[in-house]
Amino acid sequence: MRRHLMVTMLAVVVAGRIALAQQPGAFVAKPSAKQLAQKERAAKRQAEQLRKRIDFIPGSTADAAFRSGFNRGNPAQVLGTTLLTSGDEQTNFELVRRKVSGKPEVHARWDDLMIIRSGTGAIITGDSLVGSTYRAPGERAGGYFGKRYEIALHAGDVIRIPAAVPHQVIVSANEPLEYLLIKQRRQELPIRWYADR
Image 1 (cartoon, rainbow, N blue to C red):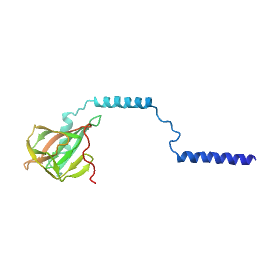
Image 2: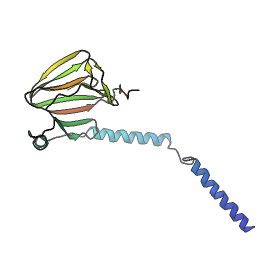
Image 3: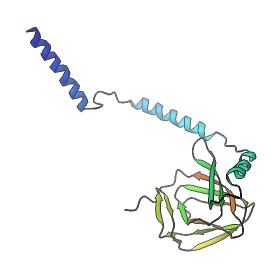
Image 4: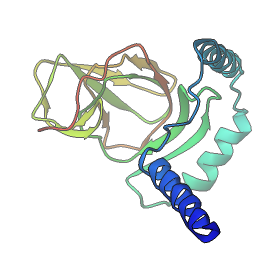
């Protein structure tokens, strides 16, 4: 009888473990509305602290990056390096040196601010980008412009290309175009392009 009782208890324990394994999370306590609200407030506080963090890049850092990776003897057609990503990850600071023109492109959620350091070139913008290919959610490249507008660029110029405006960087044949590119995320804008189906 004692043996029969032990076998029965063992069977109950095994059956209980099998039942729990088949129902993951069945006995996990769900957070209350109050706990969820506290977590959300804490996440907002942390995001606000990161947003208020100051971004600073000393001039010597940019100069050193141009001297080391962007030396005139480098054969690469396009060189780029990220100097800093903001604490809230909404802004990227990049140095770019182009010997060749870029492809037309459009970003649904990124403003591009360019500060030209040296060289000459142009920015072509358009009302639409026809025949482009999907690159990532909200990102397309290639194709051609419907209507196009051109702005000449020289050292010292500053230009901002708002999110969702198709654009292309053109480099003059004389010398490379070097610029500081500041990419600012526009979180409130919708992602307009997903993978082609």
